[in-house]
Length: 206
Image 1 (cartoon, helix red, strand yellow):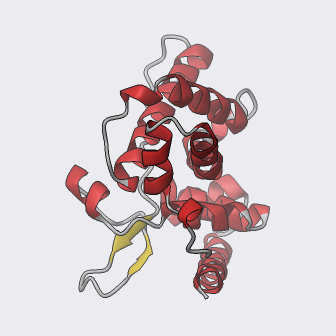
Image 2 (cartoon, rainbow, N blue to C red):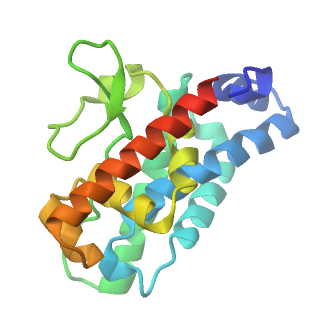
């Protein structure tokens, strides 16, 4: 991954706040894939026939552009959390629009990364993990942009199993049901997809 000035979201954020239009455009361009991956996790299977995740992405990026001056954070984690908050609000609006008055909450997506117990490294979150506190979301090592870009490059099946298992936090039984496969087949697919992601991320760091 290039280590130049443009690769840092914090630098881009600071320059955008100082009126640099090109930096602002680059900031949002870098975050679009990330928002797209999270949006895919927000769009549950019952919505897919009616709502394209790209609609959520477009609306979220538009609102973030318009409300850019309202963002008060300083870190990459706070910036991504702000984008996720806008996305979650828009996803809830889509649910209400297409489901009427039926009470149903949008599944809260989890962060893509979580620290290992000994803090020696990080791994993709498993759905059995109890979750992180708000301070953890801000202070953890911030690699979600790179991971989202890697997820977006996976094949359809590999991407789907990662989204269902790691972001929607579904048990393997339900993932298998949604994908129309047996549980053992889904578990094997998930393990292979994780290994592919690990290789992609390792190659990106070289």
